[in-house]
Image 1 (cartoon, rainbow, N blue to C red):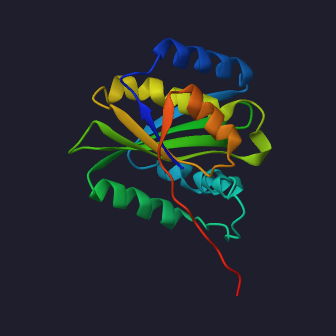
Image 2 (image 1 turned 30 degrees about the vertical axis):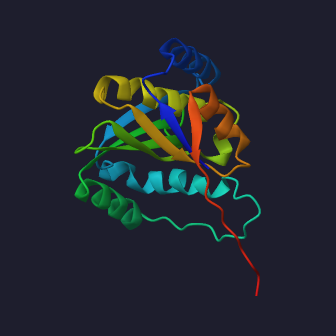
Image 3 (image 1 turned 90 degrees about the vertical axis):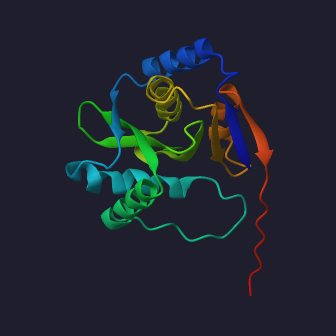
Length: 187
């Protein structure tokens, strides 16, 4: 399902309250903000965090896991930058170990800066249960409010069974704008 966030109608006090709650629940973590390409020293660690999206619900489809590599992450960045999109990443890092635990990535069109797309939000299995999904999503919104004030809409896609992310999205003023149906037949 495609959900769109109406930024103009967003209750920022609610976003700030959700962020504050997530900060309290995830005090063992810190947020890192990155614009554009990932620093070389973070690239290998981001592969594992990005692969966490393979745990997202897929409803009843039998789909192979996506494989990620440093080259694939760089190719994604080059494709976005080549299409004149700014890349914003908010990454949760465990303070004690320095391990990257979750992330949220949003791209913003430079030609139409009112349009943003949620590329990915994922939390590594070992770090779930600390409200990191809510932390990175609300942390991203608060950052974008400053960095990209022209944004009026932010689109995201989720499987209908992804109840955890859908619950966060609904609290953040997302509404359904489209539905895609996938069918699969085993031969």
